[in-house]
Length: 241
Image (cartoon, rainbow, N blue to C red; front, top):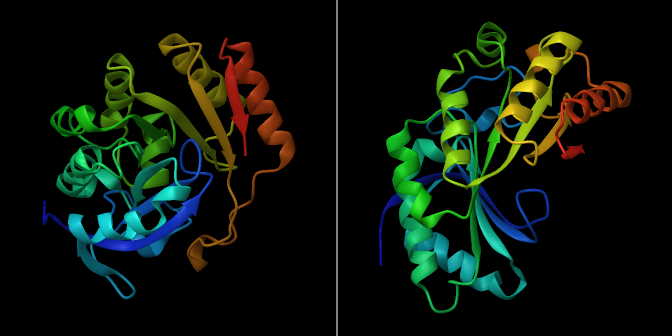
């Protein structure tokens, strides 16, 4: 069995919001983005108080204890692909295990990874849920500290390989919520695949760093306007949260 190490922020034995069905969620520590709207900023640094070291065997044992109640396993973060060797080896062992092999495998990601990383994960991953912070590269940089070339390339790449489960749009008022930006994003996603599942999430200040706690929250009207724009662009599966 693999002993590939991982720095964990946390694990959640049961979640209904991190992929299909009831899921065991592994939160890997560390993220290449520094999002001002991050709800879990303590997971950005490579290590820190409250984190712990584990490995594939240790995480598998935690999953095994609750396996009868699970539909699958999701690796999130931080950023899952920052520790992609662990993700690959965890999912490989899951699929080979007589007890755990029935569980589906998902990755929740910011999309900031090279094709060679996806090539390692594609054979053992059932679906990827990708955050698109902004279609405009400068807005994306304001929100995350980095550009979005890799993110857009990753969305295209994963879709081409039939593993793009959903794209998540976090709307932050004053940054990526203008009608023009939402309309352009809707057209881009619809051009990729009208049947793509798109989840629109309204920004909330809960959990953000104190210096960003005064950012305005997204109201229901904004979410409804975004849903309308996405559906008018031709997208058939739009969910608001």
